[in-house]
Image 1: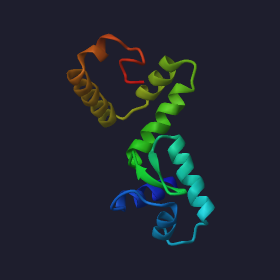
Image 2 (image 1 turned 180 degrees about the vertical axis):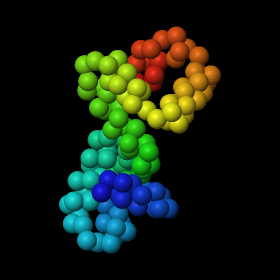
Image 3 (image 1 turned 90 degrees about the vertical axis):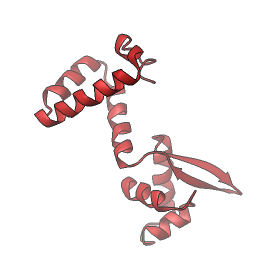
Length: 126
């Protein structure tokens, strides 16, 4: 449902109301359900909101890939042994995914060489 709501927001010409999202999704969902989904996406920083009168208008801050990345980050942040989790994750990657990850890490290092020297959250932007 979150992905469908995000997709609808991405189709909007600008900020959208919950009622607009509900209508865009076919109206089968209750307005309160749409509001709950939008609130959860806001808590995950996948959407932003602005006051418009007494209501909010919603703006996508992430696409489906960004939402998945936020979920992965939250899981990692909740684990006491980050090294073990990352080691297990990387060891289970396919050769193609491992190569893609290496390419992305090389690109990130080239863009911000300080991040390679400092593995702290501050260097990773967190």
